[in-house]
Image 1 (spheres, rainbow, N blue to C red):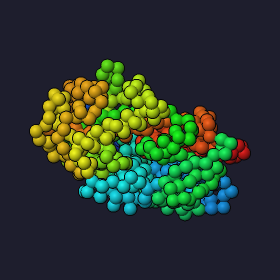
Image 2: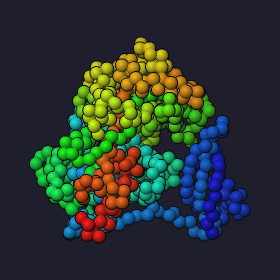
Image 3: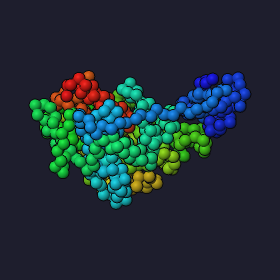
Image 4: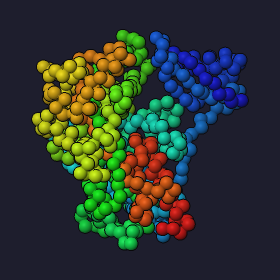
Length: 523
């Protein structure tokens, strides 16, 4: 028989196969040899008390042959002879998973990516980190896989009502991710492993008869009588399709400008802006796990913090245990930082964005920019950060307590940010309402996490690409743009997702909507 059990064990016990079988035998009332095997269905860590526990949900096989239930594999057919064709602009999670869904439904697609493939992209990132020279089309935001490829690979999402999270995770496993992402409470792939997965997805898309074109920056959309007909790229290529998915990511400002100039409706979208804070990972471990040295059977610890200051949320964002702070700008003379972790999360630092909500009422002095007001607000802060760093993407930074005391740091602790950090007063970089709320929130976070508020921590500016500052509207039922027929805004850049999984889900939703429209002959 098979039986599902919930176990609460110590970290070392969770890694001991023989011990777990003994516990199962006691729970079930059988002998250990009767247990032929078990599968982990769910795994989470409970660090609320001094003794840290691992919660396991398992399915045990008793007195019957054990078999491992593999992930659900999807077979993708050949769509090269499809009479319908969809153009997908952007090869991030939204664009890639939209393509897979279209293939599964028998429709051909052509993916246009402004940047390079993951291998070539890595070389551009090395130049950015070592020499402070940015390629505006190939960086941490632009290129195959989008911002997610080299930005950690966290897969936790709250978007369960929007689509099938397990389907996305299963597909990632099918293309090379570790099966543990199917049962971990906060699954994570790692920046070192994501490129191979993205490459495998591209291979499948091409093998299925679709086209995947790099260095194809879209500069214009051609519409006739309110119906999108063609896209034009910077090298003069013109492509036609029965529908077009716009999945260009949260940093494609040129796309927002083009839509605005063509009077295609876009809207201001609230986002968040702040800094990235970095602590020694050992300090975060000691605080979260209530120990001097982290148990070898526990992963590097993370945290999630939020505090309301004058009715505005200040919260941690994209927390990276054992991670690295990276330069995530897309243009010269603008400085943006983000964080990522390798699969083992074995770097000596823990970093997290700490950001403040930015609402439309905070943008009064940018109203002349209309729907682009939040984008110009974001851009101005990034330019100030670049200037304060001194150039070549060196970042302005302060020790944490010094920042809260408005004091210039006479020295800075070691930092994972490869282009380097420069001591500066961040109050001269950040808008006042953000600076003041961060100062208050950091002190409150120190009360919630004893040891967090320390000058051994460094804060680096600026964390500003938390989400798109623009929303491209779409109809609730068809998911297409209300003004332009057959144009389907999608993913983070359109304002409908916030991370790898939610973007992938949105890509699939849009693809399915296109299929349903096609079947109803409403293209």
